[in-house]
Structures are given as structure tokens and as C-alpha cells.
Image (tube, rainbow, N blue to C red; front, side):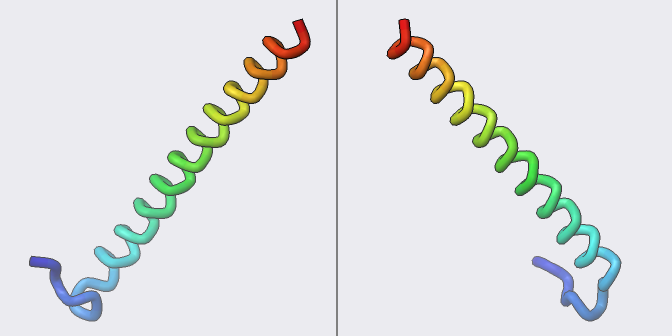
Length: 47
């Protein structure tokens, strides 16, 4: 059961920060994977 956001503003703020960090990490990870795949594909096509 989640506590009401108004009752725990610091918890809510902390959760938002964590969500933001996780989202950034996942986005960076996906971007790196896609960049690696594209680079490999280009390398295969060029050679």
C-alpha cells in the first residue's frame, strides 16, 4: 500500500529521483546497444 504523497513528500520526491535515474540509465543502455548494432551492421556491409 503506497503512502499518500502529501503525507510523505520526501519519499515521493526520492521516488521521482530514483525513477528519473533508472529511466536515464535504461535510455543510455538502449542507445549504446543500438549504436553498437548499427556500427556492427555498417562494418559488415562495408567489408
